[in-house]
Length: 85
Image 1 (spheres, one colour):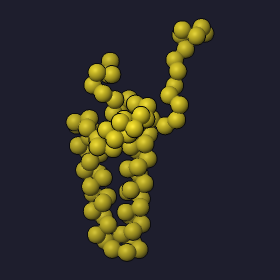
Image 2 (tube, rainbow, N blue to C red):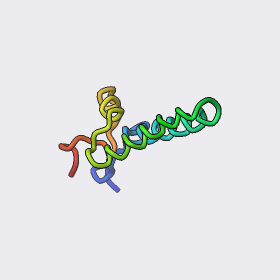
Image 3 (cartoon, helix red, strand yellow):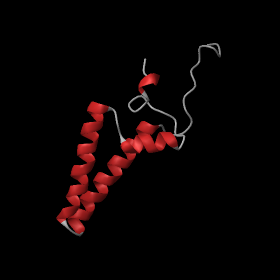
């Protein structure tokens, strides 16, 4: 394989990976807090789920926008519309 045929993978996690990691962390954290402290923590889980649902339709995720501005490499799910092929 020549160097012109090789594609370079981004170093470190992409925006998509960070979004999924943070969503999973907040869901697990709120579920744990709902068992240990108050069932009102389940509202955080509902908010994360609703945000993921709307992002699947609109492609707009507030965390993805922030991460992109911080210079994190784009992924396939939350890339800019001009980057899509």
